[in-house]
Amino acid sequence: MVSPGQKVVLITGCSSGIGLRIAVMLAKDEKKRYHVIATMRDLKRKDKLVEAAGDTYGKTLSLAVLDVCSDESVKQCINGIENRHVDILINNAGIGLVGPLESISIEEMKKVFETNFFGVVRMIKEVMPDMKKRKDGRIIVVSSVMGLQGVVFNDVYSASKFAMEGFCESLAVQLLKFNVIVSMIEPGPVHTEFEVKMIQEVKQRDFPGADAETVRLFKEVYLPSSVDIFEALGQTPDDIARCTKKVIEASSPRFRNLTNALYTPIVAMKYADETGTMSVHAFYHLLFNLGPLMHVSVMAMKYLTCGCLRRRTISPN
Ligand SMILES: NC(=O)c1ccc[n+]([C@@H]2O[C@H](COP(=O)([O-])OP(=O)(O)OC[C@H]3O[C@@H](n4cnc5c(N)ncnc54)[C@H](OP(=O)(O)O)[C@@H]3O)[C@@H](O)[C@H]2O)c1
Image (cartoon, rainbow, N blue to C red; front, side, top):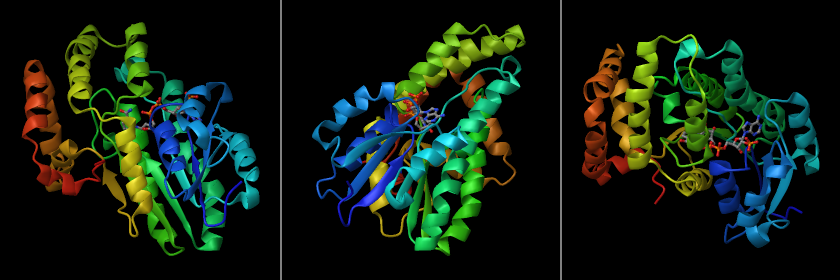
């Protein structure tokens, strides 16, 4: 039951990772300001969430089934909410895809877009009309740094997040007129099942269709660098949940919210050179010329980054 004055928050993809931690953090809000509807596509995966929610389960946190890839599932879930009333929609569900493009089928690529892009569009289309009518609402989208800057061998995942950034940037203007505020959360690497699934999947694949040199670059240059980056710069799902809570609680939230200060220079470099050449060349040198030194460079970057970058991000602390 939603208590008077409580905001109804619906979150997608709460069976693990960032979605799970956002759901628990909001449900445990000391002032009990939120009633969280934590959704997942398969309720058999609910145990971790229920355990983490503790005694908030059944009070400030309830569960619902929702598959962002299904029109019917989305409708059923929203129709099951009292008066279809959602104050804050948090689009978190997402899947990754990494590897040489030649070895990825169009079907796999469509699945990424179906989840990461159309999944968000489907959710927004379902709750937006009521928010507009009430002239009140918040829409949060868990995007990625890769929605602002493409990353080698993440071509399709990155494209799906870019698509969402463009979609939301356009929609945010119209929705502001109706007092519905859209915000993006843009994490860098985060230690979740996302990373585990990616590494497992890559180990099982033999990349048919990709030439030997591309497979070598992927396995021997990109993957070790990626593991180093996750180890050195990775945030926790709780860090992202704290950033998201700050965005929700801000009286005038920013549209873009990088969660990791170490990525500020990368995004700044992109906007500093409108030709885009600087970014392409910088990433080329970083990976192919400095690849063997990546570990040292990443650690140095971590320790040298000064606190002044934090004001350009939504710091988890
Ligand atoms: N981890 C990172 O490094 C990182 C960095 C930047 C951005 N992100 C973004 O953060 C978001 C959350 O990812 P995470 O790191 O927390 O990964 P995660 O632990 O794998 O969580 C992803 C969640 O999305 C759910 N999901 C996948 N397809 C779905 C569908 N069709 N309908 C409903 N739920 C679905 C998964 O449910 P199942 O249990 O049913 O699979 C899971 O609960 C994603 O949008 C991701 O792109 C992650």
